[in-house]
Image (tube, rainbow, N blue to C red; front, side, top):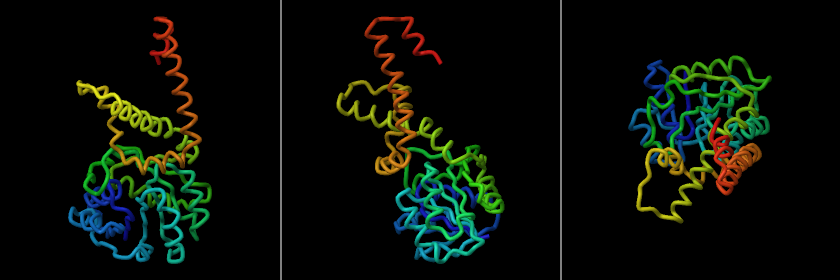
Length: 267
């Protein structure tokens, strides 16, 4: 089987490394607009062969889109005329409903596309952040539609298991709602805390709670602008709920009400 990874940043290169460690004998090729990423992934053994032209990516059994979200619609359109009816496509974007809409709009065989999201990223990015064990034991969400071919789902699930992740099927809307709470709100909070600290420098470094709360503030802000706008309704809903809880804590502090404060800190 021939696998092509488009986008060789931290996630894309990690997929290549993890799959190579599975030693299944398949050919793993890769493409990236950044020549340094392409050569870096080749040098670390994440891919067997580099692809020098994006049009050549269509000639694969499985195509994994590991690019920033903004690149996906254009790549779909670019690959569409060259895709084979049996080729399976998947992605790793952490918002699923927009990607499914793009697939329906631009791909000639949307039934061969399986929306995916490995829940295994870190605040680091670029091929230098790639790890062969990144997906070990991690959930990898798939969001097939009623029209998605069962064979396509099976192929992607086999790939996920090969990199030692755990495939889980879910409706795209449910994924986007749940991940707004599990990731999007924490990122908003981390960026906000880091900005607050920049405005109010401290002599103390902060302990484990501060480091845990702000770790993902080192993530790529440009990527998160894209993601937050793509999932803005669900994120806004979760942010409003968080703001309301914080407001209640603030009110308990203003009133010196220990009972009310205790209730807000319990869960």
